[in-house]
Amino acid sequence: MSANNMSGPQRVNKIIRYKPPSTEANPILEDPTPDYMNLLGMIFSMCGLMLKLKWCAWIAVYCSFISFANSRSSEDTKQMMSSFMLSISAVVMSYLQNPQPMSPPW
Image 1 (cartoon, rainbow, N blue to C red):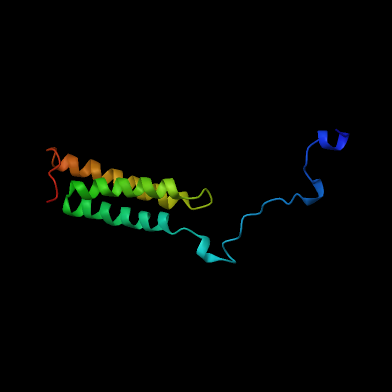
Image 2: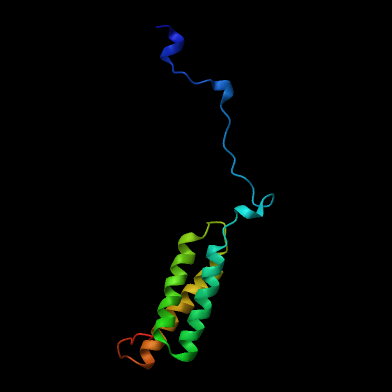
């Protein structure tokens, strides 16, 4: 074996650093799931607060968790945290007004 084979078969001059595609050039690559879940969480939490529906409040918490899990670090965290706190407050307020266990929605 020669000394060239000992270092490995890589070609140093052919290595190109990966650059993720920009979302400005191609808006299809941006995932709208966190935005939709954030909106759904706010809608369900408002329904849970106004209509005193516990299942709406729990769905709002679920949507907020999905929104948080699918979001990117560059997104606005204030809106996400306000949605999460709104959903938590909907659950707390619905159980403070009626501490009975949740009845199924059907």
